[in-house]
Image 1 (spheres, one colour):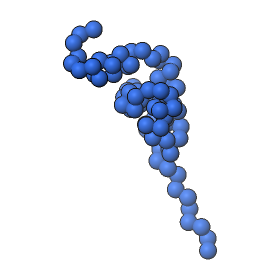
Image 2 (cartoon, helix red, strand yellow):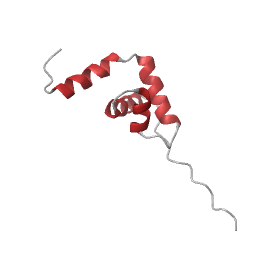
Image 3 (cartoon, rainbow, N blue to C red):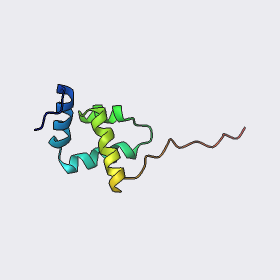
Image 4 (cartoon, rainbow, N blue to C red):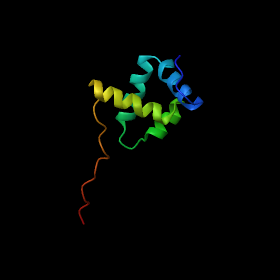
Length: 80
């Protein structure tokens, strides 16, 4: 592995390669499936770094294999 600087960067690069394509795709789908979920909450549930998940989502969106995440659904005003 080429020298990429500090230990955190090396661990990050290793994590990017250590997960299967199927795991990454499932993680991206899980994040995108719920507008209320954050990168941190999904990453914590899966045991991955938040930034790692964020990059997987961006890569999938750039490749056209994932859509953009929808915002929370707004409820119509209640009738009085």
